[in-house]
Every structure is written in C-alpha cells, then in structure tokens.
Length: 346
Ligand SMILES: NC(=O)c1ccc[n+]([C@@H]2O[C@H](COP(=O)([O-])OP(=O)(O)OC[C@H]3O[C@@H](n4cnc5c(N)ncnc54)[C@H](O)[C@@H]3O)[C@@H](O)[C@H]2O)c1
Image (cartoon, rainbow, N blue to C red):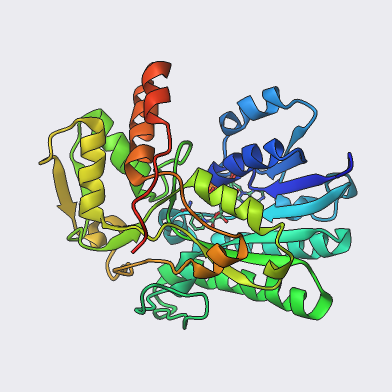
C-alpha cells in the first residue's frame, strides 16, 4: 500500500458512512469523506477527524458536483458510495427529489470511479425486493413492486436503477463495481426523524412515552449492528470475485416489531405495557403498504468474505443505544457496549 491509497466515502458524515470510515482508517488507508450534510452531521465525524488528522479529510459538498473534481479524486483507488436520500418519510415527502438525487449521483460517482480506475461499492437496499414474498430473500429473487401511483415504491425502484447502472458498467467497461443490498442496520448515530424504527423506539422509551408500533406489530425484520455491516463491506470490496455481483448484507435473526418494542423497553428498564398501536395510514397516509416480512439470505456474502458472523446481538446494540441516549457514565457504557455472540443462525 502506498501513500496514495485513498478510500473515498460518499455520504461519509452519515450514520453508516461514519462507522465505515472508522473501520477503513483502522486498516491503514487514508479516507476522504464527501457529504452535503443533508441528513449527515458534522458531529458524526468530529472525533474521527481529530483523532486521525491528516489521514481522514472531510469535504462538505454534493457528491454529484464533486464527481468531476480532480482534487477530490486524486489518489482514490477505492470508493464506497453511500450518499443517498434515505428514509420512508423523506421518500413520501418528495419522491422526485429522492429519485434525482439517488440515481443521478450514483451515475456520476460510478463514471468517476471508472475514470479513476477505482473499485466501487454501491449501497443498495432491501427495498429493491419490494413486496417479494419468498423468504429468505436471495439476490436472484424476482423484484415485486406495487403500482407507480404509490410513491413508496420509488425508493426501491431508484435503488434498482442504481444497481443496473453499476452492473452494466461492470459488464461493458470492466468497472470494478460491487453492489450490496443493506437490510435494517442499527447502531449509534442513527436518527429517528426519517422513519427509522429503532432510534424512534429508543427516544420514546427514554422520554417515558409509549412506544408507537405501526400496524399490528406482527411484521418481521432482522436488525444488524452497523459495526458488523461496515466490517463486511470493507472486507467485501477487497474480494476480486465480488466484482459485478450483488450481495445481501444483514442479520438473519428475525423479530416482530412488537418483539422489538419489548426488547427496547427491557433495555430501558421501562414497564412492558408501554406500547401503543397506530394504523400505518395515520402515519404515512391512505394506501401505504409495508412488506410484511423481510429476511436476507446471506450465504453469498458468507462465502465471499470467508465467514459473515455478526458479533453484536440485538440486545447488546439496544443496551448501548439506551445508555448513549441517557448519556450514561462511561463505565456502564463500557460494560454494555461489548458485542456478545449471536445465537446460531436458523
Ligand atoms: N440504514 C439502513 O438501515 C439502510 C438500509 C438500506 C440501505 N441503506 C443505504 O445506506 C446508505 C447510507 O444510509 P444511512 O442509513 O447511513 O443514512 P444517512 O442519511 O445517515 O446517510 C446518507 C448520507 O448521504 C448524504 N448525502 C445524501 N445525498 C448526498 C449527495 N448528493 N452528496 C453528498 N452527500 C449526500 C447525507 O447527508 C448523509 O450523510 C444509503 O445509500 C442508504 O440508502 C441504509
């Protein structure tokens, strides 16, 4: 590795991007973060920038605008493209802005990576599966969307277009592109304002409010700690056979949203009855549809990186989130923040 080995992370001041930056800088690389701070925050990367001054740099800019800026791309041989408009609420508020941002930015970043000769990983989403009913969801499954009159599908469709762009460039031009479909990712720095369930539950539990479960709470999801996710991403981009392929990344440990609420209440030491249900339509408007179950098949990832074994249990992550939200003293945090082995996959 030379002085010039630089990893560019778009969306680097966001939730996942800031953790990924921590993981990459530990491996000895230089890291350049590009973020327009639309949902990202300077505070996410403040410690990283001061601890690794000179090795981690931050450029506050739009990834679309910097795609042709040679200074931003100097020495870059690896790119993680995470910049995107994220969250159900933002998609519903302005689907057109989300689509323009997600697709045009990805196109520009992919072509810039090609010019630089850099390998590039793009963050797609489990949302591309739409309402595909076959579980666990495997990368070659049919993608099943609702009608275009329901804007909620636009996010998954935009991410699917991103995937097509990356895979087409990989096939036709030899671009070293890898696609990951991230499933529910949780951990410190995630914010609940845009429809993310875990930070919202934690905030409600800490305030002493009832946790608001949308629908009957029987819908299932699997939550993976961001540190396990970013470790997998960092390892995957180093695997030559991953080029031109799609990989699910997520936990295989499904819980109902009602069970998730119970876990959060327990972590917060709050009474178990403090849960209220709310119809989806009261939150997201009439006709909103949420896929009932989401569970990834991760065999492909497991095989590619020589073992994908998440170290964080759901409870370990939730305990840490509760402690952080309370500003708990560092000793308690150190005890609760240790990853503990997950129960074996089923
Ligand atoms: N968190 C999850 O559970 C999850 C699940 C599936 C996919 N993803 C994907 O992972 C990626 C990161 O998501 P996250 O959860 O960290 O969300 P986030 O909102 O914290 O991160 C996205 C970052 O991109 C930045 N950004 C947006 N548009 C930009 C642009 N044009 N130029 C520069 N910066 C821009 C935002 O300011 C933010 O910092 C996204 O691509 C998202 O679609 C996340």
